[in-house]
Length: 364
Image 1 (spheres, one colour):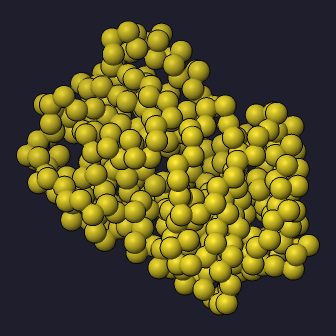
Image 2 (image 1 turned 90 degrees about the vertical axis):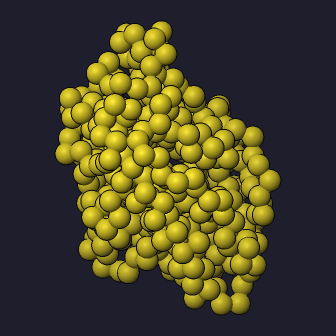
Image 3 (image 1 turned 180 degrees about the horizontal axis):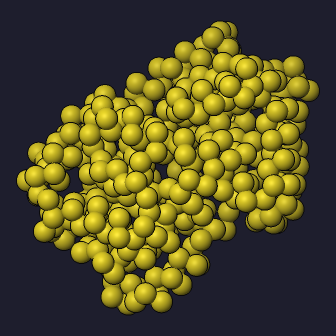
């Protein structure tokens, strides 16, 4: 959302980004757009969603905008109602296929509710876009309407990278960045760590924060220092940390179409840093890797499979393959950047609001 809002602000729109204040939220950094966080008494479960949606609707009722943008389904109903009351267009920004995320797929009644919300919201959106071509095609098939694609790619920094190393550098580490949630292959990754010749750093928190720490402790990975949980890391600090990683990991289980057709921004974060990566062999990553060859794809998340793939790219592994992936990432990074994607974003909003310079966005 920082990239989207900043691009719109630089293009002359006045943007308000609304989110929520969580227990572990980092302080807001100055941005070229207005930011507001809602404070909720409840932090999870059905009551949280009810409270957050009510607080969001009450807050939006006091705001004015030329368009209202809902980020995923969990903000869609109050944003739609505010747009309807004001007679302004609704924008639906689908960062994922919400009805197919693991937490929803595992609960059929909850999934039916969110499918109803999706079927209600999507036809009423004046503009709809998502983060990858595969998801875009799936939305179009479901709802019979066009879905634009604005890929969730990092903004490319101006700095030049040093030449690709001839082998995996000693003293580096394996990096995971993102939410510590179900379906991310993190339990399998920890199970593989006793057989991996390297150190793992995890940046992020989520529903599995406590259970993953407990698993790492039971395996002796915390005491040995082979696994480190960094918690939430500020974006600028994460970019710097990524530059020093030896290998990045992007692992998912096929526990829903949202994950299967995902195109995570961490894939591009690793690529921009020139870091080889181990990635699950899902359609979007396979398509990109066939073109750029910046990752080793794994067919499954068995600990033996992960250990073999990571050891291949760590010191003592296949030095030639490591150098090849690092060089390919350096060649691909100018071609895969937010600077390209934002042109499509701005085109979409210019067509929607040819004379307006006010936009609002809400996300959970």
